[in-house]
Image (cartoon, rainbow, N blue to C red; front, side):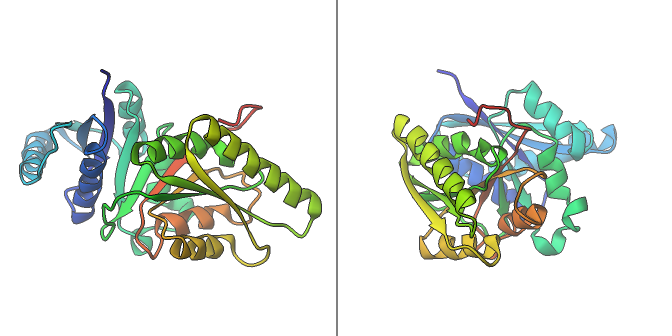
Length: 268
């Protein structure tokens, strides 16, 4: 039986431990290898960092379904995480962020630079993120095909946990745009039905900030994980700020995010 590979970039901080804990939590539900990854600026640091990472692993309870590995290499996080993930055929990267205060503005955001360099989905956690059973996942979409590229990854995760995916869109004052959103949401529900993925669809009222409405929905529906596709050409105004606000959400929920590619006719 083939195994998954999850990569956890670990910067030897507490939030790195949170990302590892979340990876181990997922590993209790699916057979996987977990690679702790650290990139250094010179070879002299490799042995010392390797030892620290193995000490971190030794302090954890490792599920029988998980095998742990360590990779410390000379490299740059903005280019080499992607290369390593592609080379090792990783399914998922779990990474910690130090939150909005630790971010630059999104045009220079460290986390977003890493995310947009990779084809692999990420789960971003904050230091306070808890690894709780995933019962509800929210997938906010917009009017672009690119926003749908998170649908398959979110559905796969939902099926592991038997969770419900909440697909939400935004109503528009323009009737044509509202109908387009409805059609897109129904298309996703049909795709999930084909895969026996539990799904709910909802359209949020028009007007006001979309991210605030998403977070309000998340709180009201007891959502456990947010899942979005990041695409800089989104029709949503200031989508960069939208994505960043969900990654660093005040509820400290994990956020699955994938860097969307320019879409053709294929949505999924």
